[in-house]
Length: 79
Image (cartoon, rainbow, N blue to C red; front, side, top):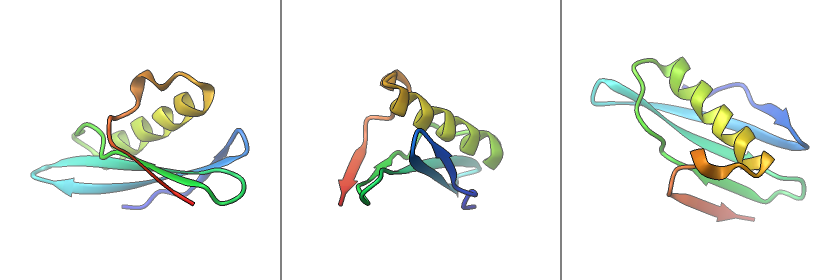
């Protein structure tokens, strides 16, 4: 499941949710102005795809707000 991207603080946030072993995990994509992209995740598992996507969006907002405590440890950067 791919989510509909949202705009937050001038960045585009989108989420890719995958079904793995009976659970749903999300990877967050953050695209900043100028085309710099980051992928964060996969994040922890949830019972539903919507819950996984909602958690990922909230993590993205926290990341852009400077509160990265919710961030998953795996981060990729391209640009």
